[in-house]
Image (cartoon, rainbow, N blue to C red; front, side, top):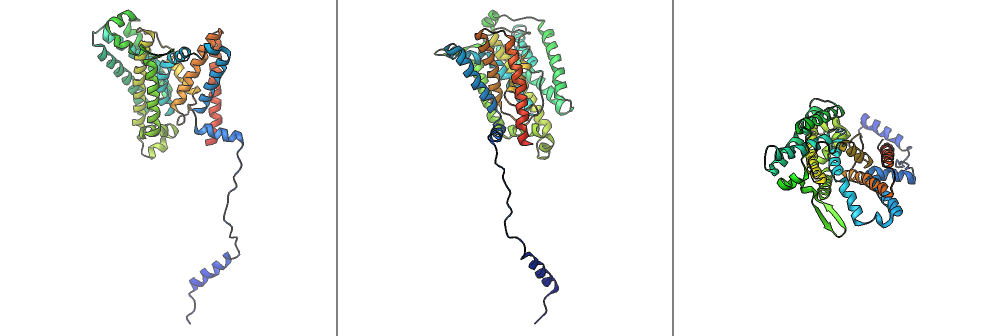
Length: 360
């Protein structure tokens, strides 16, 4: 009989050592999560839940204090009318913040777009529908410039949009000569400019076309952000731009498209603003940038980018509207509204940091 191959014998000797080893399958102990940790994970997977909970509690609190006076169909739809402009501008702000940026120029772009619509229709005699398109073109151009400076020049979004805010604000006053186009003139010569101010009555409820536009816009963007490649790329860029680039996402093009779309949405808000106030005023909507950031932050969208839902922004805008109208109906000093909203902003950021610990 032939002697065993030395290599085979060595392998067999090695295997004999394994006969003494344990045959148990490796297992990992799972620590039981507390109720608080389960809640933390739920909030991490549903970032709009916090804002929805606060909104429901706010409605319940003011409903308990004011009763039927607050829960009437007219009052609840009045809240929607008051937050329509903030909701539309907040949608633009949401897109930018999801990419880990910020846009301080949204309010100024909104007002300039509305002024261009009015001036092109009345100063230059363009057909009102064409004047509206010119307003959208101006809004898109401002957003495009922001996007190019952020994406290609690598300038910080805060600095770029702060500068754009000042430039657009000054351009707005210089171009309009601080002139307000009256509601009577718009009604007689360019009624399309007030389109979003028209309302639909359903019983005691009064819904303007501006409210309907806000709801449809938020619904459309929610679908785009959750069910399209473009929307997933927005989240990817905000979460980690370097990883997104390695995964094949054109980060520069994405940022430019986000800022350009933000400018277009601001122009839509400018058109809705004319319908809301009934005139074209260069001084209207001065605080829309701050109000939009407030709605985004209270809505649970992370200022660090990559996490949040546009539905949360809508809930955040509604929370502000509920507090403003509720406290006004109670008869409290208006300063209490700002105080409570300030507390909500700080609380929302603190909760966001607490929720982010799950991902960490």
